[in-house]
Image (cartoon, rainbow, N blue to C red):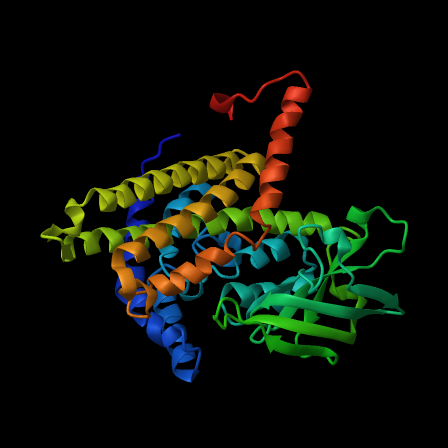
Length: 397
């Protein structure tokens, strides 16, 4: 594989980069308010993206998307990731949920949810995490769904259900099978419209001072039709893994864009500011920040491209994705942290995007599986090869 941006991808990548830097990034102060003006501005950006052929580039063509191959999408997603609003403005926020429905939804579910999802006419939400439960071991989840006649009755509490306050529906992972069922066959996915009686949003959970739409929701005898089951009964873990695997690498792609933006800001600052008789760019400790950041970004980028290459080749790439989820999250935090250090006091304020980016970066080491889980599972998979009398051939992966 080549690490160069393919000539076939460069025009669309350049167009997305221009869209992000010229339109989305300058709009961030308004978009972060989340008010009526922000929603109108986001809708206008979405219309522009559709008009200019930049909409839903990672979605399959048969769903109305751009149909970019996985590896090509890395090159686009890394510039789209420069802003937290890139996904929303360019129609890729729904990609994980769209792919999940594309694989498992019934014809009626596809008609009701999938088509409007791809066009951002509705938003999805996904409920797995529960308060008081270690989500790194989802077999502990306590939310249940009981089949009563032709209805599922759901009881429990979920939190960090992102955008539940704006979503048309939530895909809820809950226990549907009796005690004694093997844990990884005991859970199912059920689609729950958010206007269903008993579906109650308790609060928008603040995250490091950010109001990001991470909702806590009570399911108080929520009744939905039996046909709202997504995929086969008891296959919740299979569907969740299919959803989370690509989702993790999507995160890593976007983190490259965030890191690039922080790196740009840091290097520009080093030339703009002077101290102790010369520009900061001449100070060796500042040069160390540049070197360390370059090395970490480049390493994370190579790992991300390699993981995408393996997925394009038909591999599940579990080792590669587990590694990049950890390395990418650490890299993002470190690069933004150094940029803030270079900016000094100004970097701690809202005068630059860095303080906002920094808070999001810290959360990256927890969501979609904490670092510790990915480290353990990745190491175990590698060690199994040695237990079988083989070794890990890096050049053949």
